[in-house]
Structures are given as structure tokens and as C-alpha cells.
Length: 437
Ligand SMILES: Cc1ncc(COP(=O)(O)O)c(C=O)c1O
Image (tube, rainbow, N blue to C red):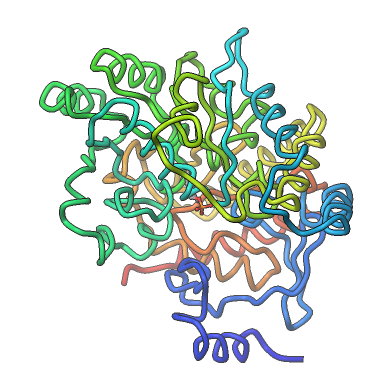
């Protein structure tokens, strides 16, 4: 048996930082990353044989819990028929139809056509190319603290790992490309109106996380998405709704289905849950827009592994099992964990807020609920690493950054929830004792 530390030392000799995605290095929580060997339901097991209740959930996809038997069987069956053909399969059409049918509200169907890709990054990148192709304009508006994947134009003031590492953006992005993205503060309709007043006829699209979850949870202000759609449309620009994280998680039709004020996005991007744990993501929208994509239209997009049959099988099985009972279990577990975390912190005298968007939540160490990236960054983030390390030592695997959501699954049963609840008081005391720097 090896230790996590031995695995990490070896990994660092083989891969930059020992990881294939930066947050996995546990840098901001000053802890040795755990190397997992198996997972089942709400639990993950590391190379040392230690079991943890998991609140990372593969960063979202594991919504039914790890290795859900129906999902595993669907993938095994698909694998037995061939790993991929580089040609179309009936399953792709079925998944596309399933996505289109689920994303509905009050009789509206914003998704008439779907293109399957392999990652959320590809989905948002393609949506932007499509918006540019449709409008003949170049500029894109994004919000500070929102994360839309790691394509060149979308890394400016991004959330998720970029926020965790406190990077303003990324080296290697040409200035000419960065200049095509206008970054404005979130939840600030004045800033939206201002940027459209100044450059409205050059803006192809505004891209927004449907309910931001990559700077921790920062819910949209009441009616924000609807106002955003109206402003963009008034200027002939498109609204790209990024539901890579929220899609099929916060409800059967994603955030689109539960935003208190209905609104009309033009393109919607999906990822994570829609692939059931395998690499699959999607872009959806009306036929008139989507059919600008090759082979019908002039906007090029392609992928060797797009619509891979194993990923399609995992996605279909996951969506098939995400019924109202699964959402009810997920919502109940999420509420129980969120409220227990908040009350443990209150009992320890730690200033914090619990922010929620549907069943997504995170804790922020601030007196007032942050509403944008600046207020998120102003929190007492130094309280999170000791809190995280205490939870980990007690067998609970939290996201290794204060800027991430806690991912609960429908498999978090009473036993899993009570293990989390039991660990919280000591972690809260560790957060209380934390000092800056
Ligand atoms: C809202 C959002 N968009 C896009 C992405 C990028 O997805 P991927 O990591 O699959 O490229 C993410 C990933 O966390 C995300 O949360």
C-alpha cells in the first residue's frame, strides 16, 4: 500500500503540479491531496484505504452518487458493443431528445437542437463562436468571478481554479483575444446597461452562469437573468446561459426551470450531470441558431470523441434516474448539510453566511452575503483551510477551495449526512481559531 504523500510525490515527477486540473493539488488548503482508488454512493476511498463522505461529487456529475448501478451497467453494456465508431449512433439522438424535452418551462422549449461535445469548455467556446457567427459581431460580455471553462477568451477574472489560485487571468492569452471579452461586475444591471450603451452594436453575446457557483454560491438578484436577456436582445445580442454546473442539478430543467422570473436565453450550455460522470457536454438552442453549425451552416465545430457512446450511455442513464424522488432526496440532504454547517459555525462564533441557489450551497466567511466577485474576495477566506483540513481528518471530503460549491448527491442518506454533521463542530472551532496569513 502507498500513502497519499507518496502518490503525490510520484505524480509531481510525472505531471505539472502532480495533477491534471489545478484545484486537485489542494494548494489553497495546504494539505496533501488524496489519491482515490474507488467510490460508491456518497463515499470515496483513498490509496490508504481511508473512506470519506464525498461532497465534491466529481465536481458535479456524480448527482446519483458514485458508481450508481444503473449508470455503471449502461456504460458496461455500451462498452461491450464498442468504444466508439466515429460515426453517429441512435443513442446520441435519444440523449439530444431527452435534453430538449427536459429543458422546458410553461410550454416553452428553448432547446430545439443539441450538439454534443466532450467538455463544458468546448460547449461554451462553441456557443460563443455560434453567437459571433450569428450576429457578425466579435465582443463578448462576461461577469467577474464566473467560470466558463478554460478557453482563451473566457479566462479573464474567472472563478473556480482561477479564483482559487488568485490569478487575474492566464498567461498565454493574446492581448488581442482578451480584448474581445468585456468583464463587468455580477448582479449589476447598471454595468450591463453601461457596457451595452457604449458598445452594444459590437456585442455578439453576454455569457452568464445561470446561478453562479464558481466563486462559491452567489445567487442572481431577483429578475437579473430576465433583465439581462432583455438588454442583450434590445441590442441585437444573444444571451448564452451557462448551465454546465446547474443544468439538471438544481431541478429537471436546470436553473432555467426554477429562476423566480422566467426568461428567454438564446443558447444554453450543459455539462457535468448530462454526461453522468464521463466526458460529455452539450450546447442547445433554437433550430435557426443551432443550424448555423457545420455541416448545415458556416460555423465550424467538430470532435473525434463527440457523442461518444459510453458517455452518451452514462448521461442517458443518469437523466433517466433523475426523477422527482431523486431530486427530493438531493434537496433534503442538501438542506440538512447546509443548515448543520451554518449552525455549527454559529455555535463556534464564526461570522459566515450560507448562500443557496436551489440545492446548491456554499459557506462564505463574511457578515453580509456577497453579491459579486469583489465582495466574495473580501471574505475571511483564511478560515476555510483549517475548516477543510478538520473535515478531511474526520473523514469528510469537501471541495478544496472556499470558491467552490458543495456537491451533494441523491445518495447522501441519513448515515452519510450524520457523519458530516458529526464532523462539523470541530471544523467550525478550527475555523474560529484561524488567523490571517
Ligand atoms: C459553469 C461552468 N461552465 C463551464 C465549465 C467548464 O467545464 P469543463 O470543466 O467540463 O470544461 C465549468 C466547470 O466547472 C462550469 O462550472
